[in-house]
Image (tube, rainbow, N blue to C red; front, side, top):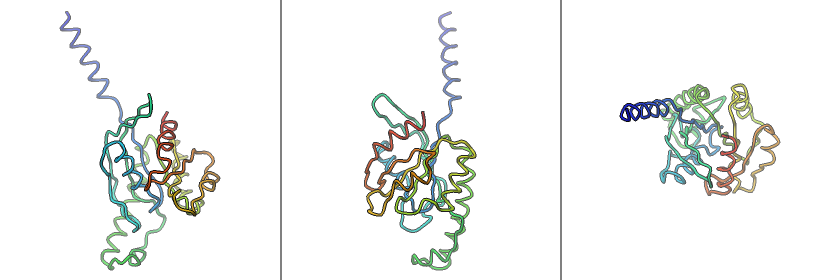
Length: 210
């Protein structure tokens, strides 16, 4: 009888964990806002390794990148999730823009084609997200067509959002302008590159998820 009961309990727990969904947190935003830099910061803090390659050239990330089973802790709070770094969203991708960065025509056209596909994939993946972190360059005007398009898509899907005003280490950064642009969402100012306010970022993430 004890053996039968033990087998039943084990099967119940196995089915319970098998059906448990892993939380998906996506990093979204325009090119060069610092998504991959933030992804690397998170992964280095909690996994001891980086996630991807950051570059000053737009659209360095052109494919969906996933880092599974990240576990962050703060006091008694704990969060397990898969982190998804997405290509930068853009309304227009012109291969000539890459020529300015020293690429030849063949490389530029290839990058533009891959970047365009990456944008389409990123938008498709929105339906998979449980939470989205929108990473914006705080030195730039937040009232851009790209930013408004991203926020509009998230609002339509009713996905919980945390906005990161990145690059606060730069003198031109204006967090209040980002807050004024999107008052419906929490905004946290950080430097993903240098780690400024990263603890505040994690606390804000706990709040948004819960």
